[in-house]
Amino acid sequence: MKQGRNTTFEERVEIVNYTIAHDKDYQAAVETFGVSYQQVYSWVRKFEKNGSQGLLDRRGKGLDSKPHLTEAEELQLKIKQQEERIKYLEMEVGLLKKLDAIQRKNRR
Image 1 (cartoon, rainbow, N blue to C red):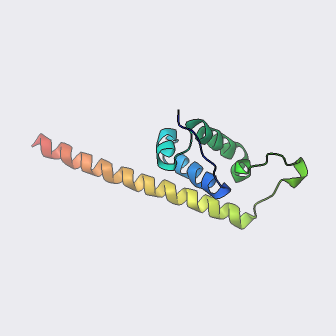
Image 2: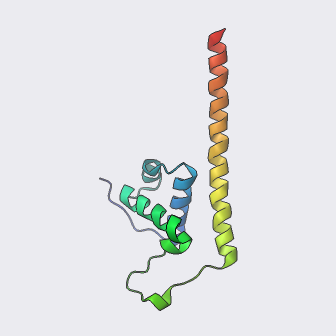
Image 3: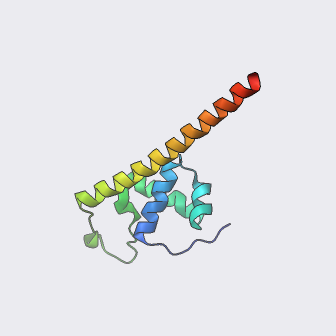
């Protein structure tokens, strides 16, 4: 089992966006970012339930101290997530085109 490491809020957001953009490939996120599988899984679940607010480290803080991201910051996070998703889908389309070309070549 891979030992996790300390991460910042921005790193957690990036890791979650990467994982979601790659169809929840937790193992790829573990290998790419050097964090534990369990932690990535936990962050994705928290993100899906509470948005980016779920990724904040609130240990030792009361309920009143819950910080809120502005609407602009939330939109920036959504944009980054969509950009990651688009990049992944473009890569997938390119791969499928190559596979199709290889299959056509082999039929001849």
